[in-house]
Structures are given as C-alpha cells and as structure tokens.
Image 1 (tube, rainbow, N blue to C red):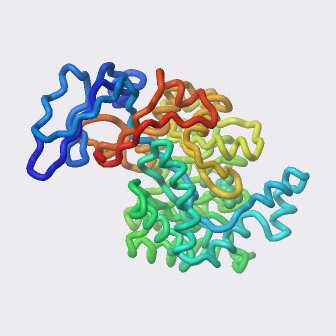
Image 2 (cartoon, rainbow, N blue to C red):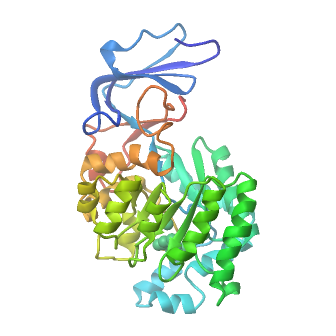
Length: 406
Ligand code: DI6
Ligand code: FE
C-alpha cells in the first residue's frame, strides 16, 4: 500500500464521524479505522475491514475515542494589531458605536495600529490566537486582510497570514478584504477608493500570489453592492473566487450579488430574506454563520436558518475572530452559540466546521471529511458522543490532532 518513503499510519479502535457527503448525518462508523499514507487518507471505514498495515506502519489504538475531520475556521480576521478592550468597556458604559468612531475608535483604531506594526509584530500578535484555535483541533484557517486599507499594509497583513502557516502545522487560506472600510485619508472619495482596491491593490497582491479569495463588507456603513460588483468583476477577471460579508446589519443586496458571482460563501446573513436564500441555493453559495458577532453586538434578528434548510443552502459556522465584533478564538464556543442562538442541530454544527466550511473555501475536494483521497487532517476527541463538542462551554476535549498525517 505504501510506496517507498511514504509513511503509513493507521488509527484503529475509533468511532468515526466521517462527514462523508453521501452518508446520512455525520457518517458514523463504529468501530472504525482511518489509514493514511503520505499525508492522505487511503482508507476510512469499518475497523474489521481495514487493510492490513504494511511493515513499519505506525499503529495507533484510539481506545474508542471519536475521530472527526480536522476542524476548519473559514472566516477570520486573525491578523491585526492592538486591542479594542477599552472600546468594549466604553460600550458597556453606554457609548454608542458612533461615539466611539467619532473619538477615533472602531475599525479605524485597528487600522492605525496595524499600519504601525511590523510584519513580524503582526505574526507575533496573531500566534496566540492561532494556537488557541489549533488547540481545539483546527487544521485549516482562513485569514482576511482589511485592517490596512492601503497597498503596503494589506500586503503586510497577507504576508503575515501566509507566514503563520509556516510557523505552525496548519493550512492558511488568505482572503483580500481591501473593501472593508473607507480609510480615513479617503473620506468623501468612496468611488476613488473602490477603484483603487479593484484596479490597483487587488491585481498587485494577486500577482504576488497573496490572494486565495476576495471579500468585501457590503453594508450601509461600508460598501454598496454596486461598489462590490466593481471589485468582484476584477476578481473574476483575475480568476479568483469571491465571498462577501452580506446582510449583517441590514439588507443591501449582498447575498444576491454573491449568488450572481457564484461566490464561495455569503457570511453573517442576519437580514437575508427568502429571495436571497433562493438565489444562494441556485448558485450553490454557502451561508457562513457567525454567531460570535451576533452575540457580542447583542443582535436580536437571527439569520433565516429555516429558509436555508428548506431551500438547501449549505451552512458553515465560523468564529469571525476580529477585535471589534467577535474577539473569539474558540470554534467550539462558536458551535455552542450556533446551536443555542440560531438553533442549529448538532449535525448541522459539525457539518458547518468540516464539510461545508471546506466548501466555503473551495477546498471540498481536499479536506472536510474522512474519505480516501483527502488530506489526513484529523481531530481525535475524548468524548462519548459528538453532541459534547457543541454542548459544553469553555471545555476542550481534544485528545490529539493530526495535520497531513502527522
Ligand atoms: N463585519 C464586522 O462585524 C466587522 N467587520 C466586518 O466585516 C467589524 C470589524 C471591526 O470592528 O474591527
Ligand atoms: Fe468578518
């Protein structure tokens, strides 16, 4: 089975949640085994039917523990400098978002700190956040730019994100979010800034190989769907997939724009309606749910989960880790919030951080399930049933994590 120089490992005596797309529910197999050679899964199924391991293969007895695919955090703003704890405190004391923005706080304060930080400093500040996610079994993470809002700083953020992937055993996907906010020096010139994002920043960063996908903040307080159309048209021209922060605070036509451009995902979606859900279903756009931001902003309008279910829109769940609206570095906590606040089922939660999160990154052929041919990214859990991953708050039952077979 193994060719020369390719390590084989077999994990046996396990309970598998394979998350295979054809299987019902979580695709449970017990007792199950997973065999990996050269970092790829070559067998996943009943323990009794596992191929006999080649000489020298490593055999791991899982003692009846559960194995899921490595978790995927498909929407984060992990790289940034500074802290917004004082802003949080001011909001608790009654300050509004507008008060804070007028006092030079909000996104702009993170932009200021990020511009002032070196690439090394950005890496160092992001590492503890990344380590917290890795400790919970995350094996792939998406990281956005968007706190630079000028070419040099957006580049620095994306380079820092790429470097995180060489500092730690984790796959990093980078997303260019130049259309996150209007930089202060461009006040009154939104059209000019959008043109710069689409015609200068995006092509330059793409040419440097720093962009895996293109995102924007489509919102009344940020960019319109027409602004985003301009950016998406350039992304399409460059052959890059798109995704969008859509209908988080109001309905602005973002989900429909995402569908029109066959986006990988539309994210947040609290204010999405039936027409949006139908368009997303037709175009195969994943709905990425971000309960951390909903929670921190004390929103009361939840995304239309029933519509997504009924129309067959695939749902993903992510931390949205960012300093302003979701300072969260626990994907397991995001699962509990998705269940408690949005009423997702346990199966929907777990599909949302594996198979559907892979799809939200365009990586469904590579990761997100325990199936032959996929990367051997596994999370091994000390739990009695998968619901424990969703049920508990602030507890991490990860026993071991395997990234690319190791
Ligand atoms: N959606 C959000 O909630 C934030 N960005 C976004 O696109 C806020 C980011 C911040 O306040 O730093
Ligand atoms: Fe976000």
